[in-house]
Amino acid sequence: MSEDFTARRAYNAAELVDANVARGLADKVAFIDPERTLTYGALQADTCRFARGLAALGLDQETRSITQ
Image (tube, rainbow, N blue to C red):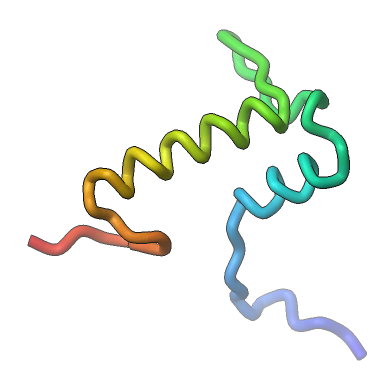
């Protein structure tokens, strides 16, 4: 049986980061750009800090847009 790759499915990139940290890869490089290199652990910490900031602004998890 083949999988329908045209069907959209929910995906959260944070799950990839969390899974790699859980697998013991927190010290492995996850992201490189011209100005910095981030490990999975640092990326997870930054992601959590950003999420707390959004929550402090009143945005709930899974919020996709702001209505006025």
